[in-house]
Image (tube, rainbow, N blue to C red):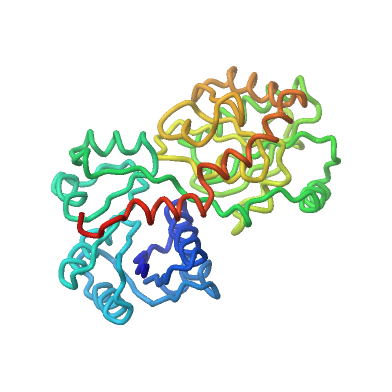
Length: 360
């Protein structure tokens, strides 16, 4: 098949990671894949040098004619079987270009923020395929007016070559952090703001550190609460056991430093890419039992589900995974779980299968 993706976002979040990973996966599977991306944006940088041919394009909003010109020019040259989009500002442009040129359109949605009433009613009907990234997100979209029969679920793909266990990287990272092999390192990776549950996690981690002297916490990412978290760590009784490294462009190597990953979000989450990537690296996870997050793990087998915002429960969960006899069997089960449910090969194959007959 031939695919033309359009994604002119300049951000570097989960939707962007999905765009990059799925386009690469389809290209690796032998499909012809091209993409209209904002020049210099993280997605353009991530796809540079790959088998995905890039076209420069920009969309400020649905009325930006520059974006239409870029998509139409690329589509007329490639003659794709499908136009594919990940971002709301490009939904209607792709639908309009698809109808103009007679090309079917597949759209993904990664956020839970409701679309306006007109778009909620019509976007999934006007596109030939519309995908949510979790069952939770699908239910949310239907509750906000989308037709149930038009919304399918396809999970985020994870590159198993990029996210893989690497003992050498683990040793190097532990050395960089000034830790020895006996250290138990809990990671929290992503945007740092209160809605991500970082203060619950900080309280829980400090409480667990009272009982477990091997426990350290590695914080990667930035956000609106970066400085507040830094100040809270500095004022905590175990400040020297918290390692806040800031924003890192490629977090994949850092999963290897971890004994467990925490995803303690208290704000709504359509999915949760970080726990899946961690499990691909043989790292068990502690996740909030809410929203689309429970779909990212096998509870009790590859990690634990904990009540969001409950510092005592999170302390107990952390201490549970500090127990080598509990943690190591979970670590051994994680990568196989991801391989079966979220690997690029599985998701790309299922995506192509779901497309089926273009105009059905």
